[in-house]
Image (tube, rainbow, N blue to C red):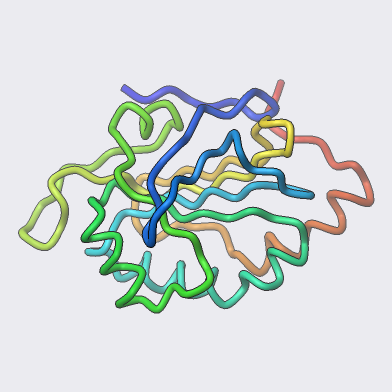
Length: 172
């Protein structure tokens, strides 16, 4: 059973290999504003393709707004490499080999594949913003492939967050 991550608490740990080599670790991120972790279902998901392509197009703006970004799946290395290449994700670091234990620590929903195209087990979408000090700020977790936060709308709120020192919500 998954745990429910709470806003304004320390984010779970996350350290994974990256397509193209190296490791990505949340503990090593030093963003000016937020680290954004986008968990996606995997290569089999056309909705993920579209969503990550939108993020790929917005990466310059997210970087300019002070974000560190990574896309994460349970896919193995070869499948993650295929996702990055086939989907043209030239601007987004793509991490792979997310474990079930780590997925549950992040409160993500897990799904068993229902056909030969889907992975045996995969995560449903989740988008998180983590403050530079490691505390969770924005948490958006879905149990279906379709509901995902609008990336342009979220980006448009960054100046408001800074201007008003807008707190994490859902902490009561």
